[in-house]
Image 1 (cartoon, one colour):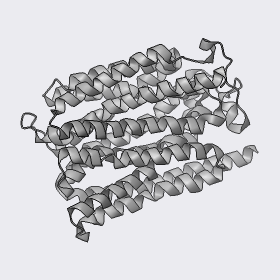
Image 2 (tube, rainbow, N blue to C red; image 1 turned 120 degrees about the horizontal axis):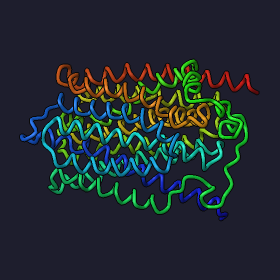
Image 3 (cartoon, rainbow, N blue to C red; image 1 turned 180 degrees about the vertical axis):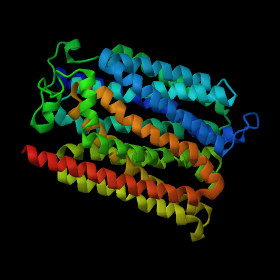
Length: 429
């Protein structure tokens, strides 16, 4: 193994474990949600839980504004480690408070910090890997997000099942985050030059994005922002992010859905919720390697078609109560449907936006990826704020009907973006 290959693996592992820790911290409140609602000292119901998660999304929007600029100014490594430390501290603090305002503030601050992880990794990937590897690198990195969710749902759900108090979960998650931050301080490097290696070289049309002749290289931040604003491709992928993020945030309601619709205990509902991140893991890992090899037309068919197939999962969940299957069979049918929903949405959520941000954004990729995420968090804020209220007023069928409409809209927008990317590539050939 060459020195470059060895360091590429080390950097990938540092990002993988670090972002996994971000997601463990982020999802602790989701796993703990049934016990939090059942805790009489909190006076929380589904509506207030949805509002709590909306502050989570607001924090993401605020964090993206500042962390994207910080990444482009101070580099990916610095922001990645700093935000991981702050996320861990706020997670620990969440387990110590009881007032809704304190929980909302810490949830918002924690998500603001966590939101810096993705743009920081965009800068690290840009500096360490040639563009023809970006699809597979993002595919692998994206699974870290899902492994973090599965760790939270399985491990933390298991702790709940053994009688561990819900507050303890937040302290356990914070400890994991601090441990991974310390590991990153030891091994994560900003770029190849830090270990005596030359910058990566890229080939092909997309390869020019990572090279020294990137069209935005000599641009000021204001000029780059203008280029983003007048790009139809940026607007299409931004609007796609609004609706695919809503689909991803179905995860926030899965434990509640399983416990209230199927009568599962909080621990079992938390563990069963692993079906969603497991589906995301399988799909995004395979799609990441496939994305680099697919033609632009192939991406329209595979990634766009896969997203649209998520509608089948929603229809299954919507009709499940009327099938009279019994609790056990209904449970497994719902797990399969939730698994496939994760398979459908994850590649569309992670890959086109991440690869496009480095390709189109170049030296401003940190800010562009944050800008696109802001659209996603704006959609998630609305989804989370009203999601719990929709459940209270119209039941889970009403909630799933809305999710079906969101899925159709996301699919149309993604197909439009990928089609435009295909036409552009044909013009450049």
